[in-house]
Image (cartoon, rainbow, N blue to C red; front, side, top):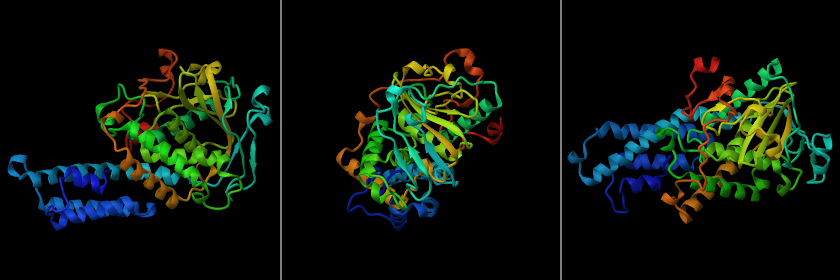
Length: 412
């Protein structure tokens, strides 16, 4: 949503412009919303909406010919702000809820690496395994960063009950991510509906912002975690993944790697006990997530593609194991209370996030050169062949944002 400064620019309000009390109240409420604590955002948004309603009650809509230049610019700014508030209000329960939902249940997450015999021998010395007991005072974790090659091979029966369970988890993860990401993929925009493209004018700038915010958060790692931490910040891979997931949720869009981190974070909260999950990087420059349960094969969960199917890995157009460059693999023993088992201090997290946003907006303000990413993939689906469309379609090209999945559709 626009800031107070952006509102004043659109409304053509200068330092000495005469302003009425009602439009001043709107700006005060808008400033409070952007600068207030996260816990009060819902209340501050309702206050802002009331201030806009008060202005609207005394300023009926008029054509430009009926208004002076100053009043016309104010009306344009107010109409745009009211529309953005409506979108924010609709998004609030489904967008903010997953941020709260990023910590819903007690649980335990364990990362397995080469030492468990899950990877080929020549990968064993690639990096050290960091073992942590009560890393955050919440979960007992054994962590492993990215390793070369594909995750542990799984044949599995795609027609089994276990495969149905894995598909159901992948289905829920894709839909949960899509409800959050109302701006769509930032580097897969060709072919998306115009209304979705219009929700983010500068995807490249937003992606740069997330990278800058992540760097600053990791530089302040000791301040953004609740409870005791027992490993150095530079080795804190789980914290980095958790921050990336939350930042992507706040950006409401992202490139494939960031959307994959968000999806993986959702699975650490929602997966059935004993579920295997992996985030993989394919040599066609694409990252996505896979889910396996019991004797099931790997099932793909990839919200980034326009039409996202929950297909077995060997039926996915990115599923050739020989072309997977690296992967991150884990077993969810119980759903975690916090995404990736990390209890974020959101007051400090949001302070740093907003501080970086203001700095970047000041030093590198968005302009048309930031409209497109360097590469736009125009990836319509993740199917290896047309006949694979028999697998569940979790979300189509139009389903980005809150409320896009009705109850009947959810049940089906």
